[in-house]
Amino acid sequence: AFIQLPYLGASRSLIRVQASSATYIEQTIRDIMALTTELYTADYWVHTGQVKEDGFMVKSAHNCSETVFRLFIEKIAATTSTTVTVIAGSSFEVTGLGNDVKRAVDMLRNLPFWNSLDLHQIKYRIELSSEHRETIAGKRNGKVHKIMSSAQCWIKFLPFNEYNFYVDLKAADYDSSQKGLKLLEEEGPAEASFYIPETFHKQVIGTGGQTVQTLMRKYNVFVKFYHWYEHAPKSYAHTRIPNVLIKTPNKNSRCIAIAKEELLQIVNERSHEHLTTYIHISRSHRRILLSEKADFINEIERKTNTCVIFPEVEEDDVGTNDIISIRGLFLTSEDAAQMIKNLLPVDYEFKIALSSKFNDFVSESNSEFFRKIIVPFRTALKIHIQILLGEHTKTPYSPLYHRIILSFSQSRSVGLEDAIQALTAYLREKDLDIIDRGEIKIDPIEKGSAFNYQQELDQQRPADMFHDTYNYQSKRMNKDSGGSSLTSLDSIRRTHSAGSNNSNGSFKLIRNLES
Image (cartoon, rainbow, N blue to C red; front, side, top):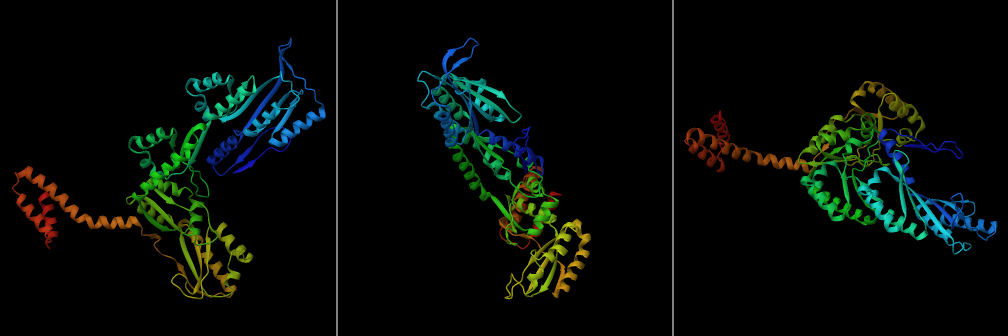
């Protein structure tokens, strides 16, 4: 996202936020507003306790020169990194981070020139998120009333905007204000959010929510699971938005890490029930898929209830992160891999004879190649180029030639001929020999534990089919004919279990009996 702050001295305190999706804009605004909740404002008054005719308190008069008084205030502001505003000599406004403001207030109270009979009145203003209002207030404002009666202070909630609200805490002396502020901070929200794949949610929550409810009671925390697919942003990158929230009062904040660890432990214990399938997706393919169909992972995960472990960042090495892991229950990972395979772009390969000058002319760092080939291919033809250098020592993974791979989506094949002609002309101009060229046709799906599970099912299926069919036919024949045909079925079962070569005929006989 892009954030534009108002310039110094601007007449309007307006912040402008721009992003690639409404989700990112909303999240950025909430993050900005969350930063303001760390700031406190304290109004500090020193008075004699006497009331004037107009109803205002008589301010305290310090016996200190203006120069010395100013030095004290400057020292407090510099030491605590706060902004201290002096009003009429005995009234102050302090703004800064919470702990810094409390330190500054304590230093103001201990200034040496106050009269011992003076009274110190303090008001704190805190800004909090609107979604935490009920958490702090409690049922029927029970928590607020308890704090006010315990600390002898006054608390009031004031609306601010659609995201935040103000909390004012006022006390007639320093000790009451500090006690009330401490109790209020303890009731404030402490939370942590993180990501757990959607496919694990039901297992973590448990039957009827029993597992997560037990955890919430155990650690006195609130746990909420979100549907990540509904909030996934539309962008040119694949990022995981936190979909699990743990919330509790600040006084119990130490339990958040423990509860999170236990949730992740449940995921780790259940992960062995999920099977894996792998699929090879090159960097060019990842870029094309994300640029033309950025939410394809969300759709596939939602339809198949799987987790596609897609890289969120690209490494400098071209081949890094090419193997994508897909995890899911039973054979869902194979279904997801097949759906991704159907979306993969097409590859067209140029094989170039080994040459010491290949890297000089064919690379993204070469300005001519970048200007004549890479840029027009990407912008005009929507074709991505991947360059793979060969090695002079032949191995199964490094043949004796260089490779240039043109990748494009299936709907962009119209510009392939123009790309082939342009690249061929460039290579010939640089005296680089083309050994071969053509479309690459390989199966990107690699076998994983899901394939092994399928093999085990295939081996067990014939026997299971026979026994299921036998049980069904036995019940039906017994009901229709009083058991007259059970002898034939018993002989078929004995023949099959003994390894008879006529088992196929037995299956045909059962089907004939059923018909």
